[in-house]
Image 1 (cartoon, rainbow, N blue to C red):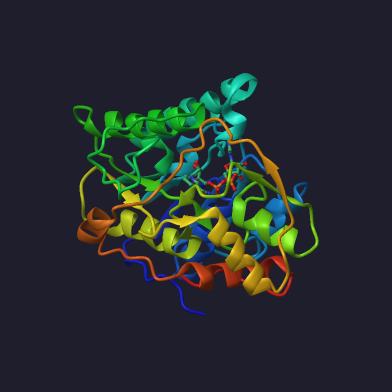
Image 2: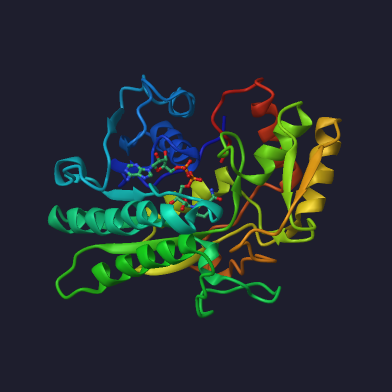
Length: 329
Ligand code: NAD
């Protein structure tokens, strides 16, 4: 199996949100390259089956320590001591749930916890923080490729919380005397094996495989820059190991695909129709996302390697239960 090459200086890393979709893949890639990793997540793999499945390859690895802890309250400095990088991925994701009553949880886990992580990094002089931001900070863009210079226009409480986390990174890194550099990665719709069950491709594959009918929000013409998780992992690693200053980078495949085209691809690859249940457009869901990824190419030498059909095929294999293996990066 091919894995991301990691600069030898990344000998110890911390991954928050390690039991989640993207975090668990990042853990696998770091371990495969010899980095000692501490993973932190409030989900406990002893009681949470999803977390256990995500961490199946990591939990027995001698280089891995997993800590079940809530970043809103847990002591952090001891966890971060001697880390070359902290990858801060823990957050409550998802646009739809962030409206209304749950916003207090979003602010606590996405904003307050990010502030705690940054303060702890400063206390023990962690040199590099990589923050999982989101393309949702852009809001409605009019269809063209979006570069990092565009004024953010978050259109959901979730997007506001991710932008606030990003701004906290910049504020801490820019503070007089600060020794931390922060790289915020604006991730565009990530997919691949272990994808969160609330996300489109996973739900479409599940529907094709005989699971629940797919709730299709809107007319399906909305399009997303779908980005394979292995490519996101290689970007995160490059962001931790490349000698750059504090910055914000788009991480997206650079191709926007409509939901209807995704459903066609799922039907073709699985050989089954995707039954759909039409639902109204959801508040905060934008029409199009598309990354201008030239800045990540220039600064990190990063480019995505996995085309959408190839990535969906890997996710299909995983969801069919044939392969619990980590992704190729
Ligand atoms: P995920 O839900 O699978 O993983 C997030 C993990 O963070 C979960 O395991 C959760 O238990 C943990 N967590 C949340 N709050 C916590 C807290 N207070 N203390 C400790 N752990 C906590 O989500 P994901 O899709 O892997 O997303 C990872 C990151 O990437 C998030 O920050 C998300 O906002 C960002 N992101 C994801 C996407 C995407 O398409 N998946 C796109 C843009 C940005």
